[in-house]
Image (cartoon, rainbow, N blue to C red):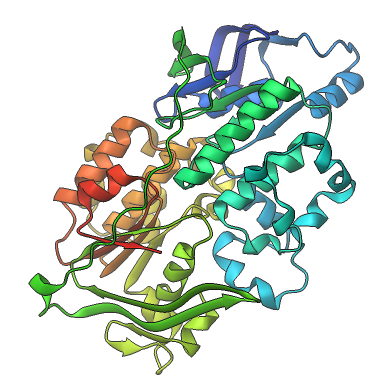
Length: 463
């Protein structure tokens, strides 16, 4: 049992939790939900022992030590917490790498291999009796930067489980960025460790199907409990591949924004893409789909001038073949990119500017009216006047989307733009993209969700 009694947390000079109490029984596995900024991540940090309390206490029936050193060591051994941005944070620890730089990993021998981050714990992997769908044997000799989002999630969870005698596993948005097969695999693995290893699981999530073992939901509202209830298990579905829809007959006179011919991408012995052709014309709305590791973000990197292979392939951007004289910065002036690593690379904890001032200064806006209109439309007034260091993952995602929508660029690349957004914010962003973006602006969105594809995209490229 875990018992939180009369807790008060003061952070950034604000009372974020006040007289907060919550009891978690041994047979309960919880999902924490609530609007962006309601306190989900902070509550997980509280359970992980990473938050200093101004008042109250947290007691665990599996931690009996009374002196601080023993208590702290027991926390580290028995409770494993995996933040939403753990993968990107791990990359930053090694020579300041961030996710988009993985395309240069094969040229950098200092990037650690997967097996190296396990240190001595690698020999204990077999003790977990890992289901075949969660096996990482084929990944052990790969550089960290070569992993897809789904592969990285597997590695991080296994690394944390081997770090001690885990009693409690805390996962912040574990399903974000995963394809349907990877979400099903992760759900099955969570069920496995809960049922076979007796590990209690608490996770935060908005709208995904959940592991069968999750039987309770806590809903937060402004750092208070709005509701606690029992929930029924839901079966994780594995969606069929979206059908490729490519038809340019009605826009044949539009100018080409991106064209790829006979594209081949290979890393070592593994061929990612071969004989790949893709034409994107001005004003089109595309969904780019495919399993984790299929090459979606690689295609984005070729368009955004981040991938060295662009020079050896037949790739045309804005009518010019890549490598015929234009610089990387010439391309980036015309293309805007939003990807999952940007929040981590932004390092928001070190930024004291408010969200409003951060965007205004970066965009060098003379007229603030367009920024204010976006803030009002997305109902972001409350948090855009806070420092970036105080914003939640969902609030930071909205900030980055606002910045993207404001920039007058011809091509917008959105890699999982709805990550971390609650239902209401996802709806507002989706409607904005459908109704209010400049019709001449070209959009390509990476997504794993059929609802997103059928709702707003005109064309689908499945790889």
